[in-house]
Image (tube, rainbow, N blue to C red; front, side):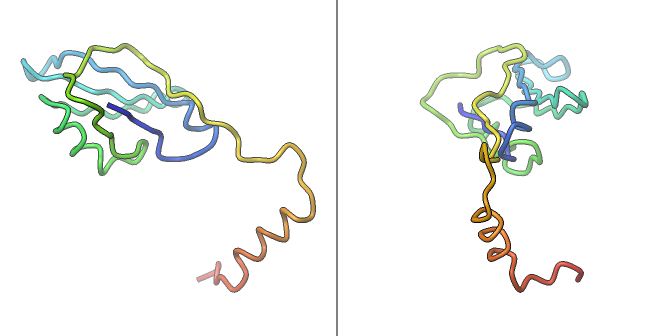
Length: 111
């Protein structure tokens, strides 16, 4: 299974994921997504990977999970999301601002 943060940039690295045996529903697993700085959590109780993929479609912290192969859910503890980088160039030049303003040109921001 592959799970990605919904929002780009370094904020995606502030998430971690755990998969553990469910304490409330025997025979199921719980996937817990944790936003480390705020300790905000979201739990999903599932029996199969396919069910997990279906349930992640509406989450606000992560994109819908992608099933990779046919392996069962494996217990994992606090696996951090990694690989996100800042989208800010090392040096900003006038061209960057021109691009930004051309993209938002004509947008009605106050409505």
